[in-house]
Length: 295
Image (tube, rainbow, N blue to C red; front, side):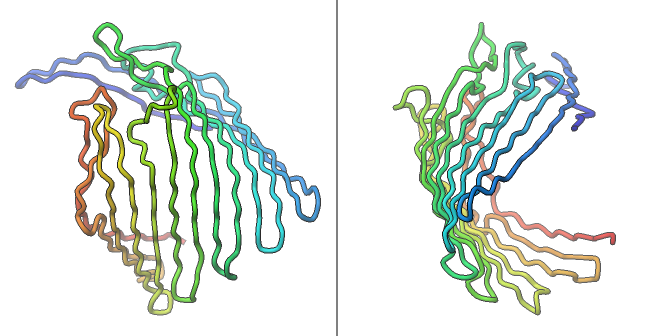
């Protein structure tokens, strides 16, 4: 069970020192969830998994999200066939900005086939092919000069992902992945906004000083994306670095980090109702984090 104690939305205009309140909405939400899963050992090589989750809120109809998987394992290699269904309820903004009582949850059906292989006693290779079907997508639709959110779109996504992770040596822990996907809207030739063809990431951690100091780095690649006005955002790569002193004191950890180390200039596309159509991403930033534990 989850309860939103406060969920308030304001809209106002300010001209000089005058402020005109257009509306104030408050819609606290109570939600309930129940999840169950069962494992069936069919043979020494085959295992089946069946599960489901029910979600309900005070504003939305109950939704059942089933999940099923069949796993075949032979030696150090496993093959998996998986299916799942999920949803996303409308946000307060989408439901009440221009009220639409008929608005309901977005839905997605996922199909995936994966192969997991142990290349080394501490290194794994994962290859997966996936297909997603999205329906009842919530989009802004102009109605009489205002924007109302409606369940008015569909989309499909098909792709391939390769991932390697593990600890190749005692002093290095690393993971890398790259995926290629094709996403299309209702029309099979319609490309979707803000949907890159390629995604890649690499991260590594090196422990020093008998595991008391951890040096970590991450590289993230994001392919080019389509803007709402038909233009495109170029691909970009971001590098992050962190250093963590573990148990600097018996109860304290200290972390120092740099996000976007190379100060890469990036932007993210916004939905059509926003002007401008791009949101500049954060430049290089430095942070210090102290964690104190109460045993």
